[in-house]
Image: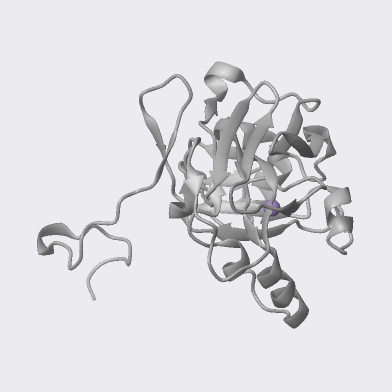
Length: 244
Ligand code: MN
C-alpha cells in the first residue's frame, strides 16, 4: 500500500464515486461549514443523567463521549424519515460547538475558546430502545446514536458575529408547540472549554469538527408527524418535522 490511509487518490483516481463532504449552513453567509467529525457528550446535565437512571458526571471524572458520522447532519427545515430499527425515537436538544481551527495534542481549557468558529443548536436523535438494550449488555451505543439523519442542526452563528453564548442563555425544545426541554447553558456540568480540553486528550481536534454538548432533562419520544423547534436563546434556532 502506498501512502497514509487518508492520502489523496492522486493520478490513480478513485474506484467509486467521490464521497461528498457534508456541510452546514452559516448564518448570514454564503460559505458553508464542512463537517469533519461529530463528537457528542453524554450525561452533561445532572437532571438528565438522573432521568436516565445514571449518576451525573462529576467534574473529577472525564465526560462520556460518543460519535455520529459526519453525514448524519440534517439541515434546518427538513422533514426527517422516522428511522427504521426502532419504535422509540427520542429527542435530545443540545448546544453544538463548531471548530474553526486544528489543534494537535492536548489543548488547555484556557486556550479552547480560540478554536471555536461558532455555535448552533442541534438534536441528538436517539433510538432509545436500542440504547437501553446496549446499556443492559454493556455494548457500544453506535446503532442507538450514529444512524442516518440523526443530527439535525441549525445554521451556525459565527463567534465573529455573535460572540460566545451567555451562561444564562436558555437551551429549549418544543414539540408540537409544547415545551419539553428547557435549561440554561450554565447547568452544563462540563463547560465548552472543559469539553474541548477533555476531548483533546483523546483526539486531535480539527476545523470542521462539531461537538454536541449534551442534553438537559425532558428527553422523550418523537412520533411520525411531530414538528419541533429547538433554540439556544440569542444564538440559533432549528425547525424540523418527523415524516408521517
Ligand atoms: Mn445527547
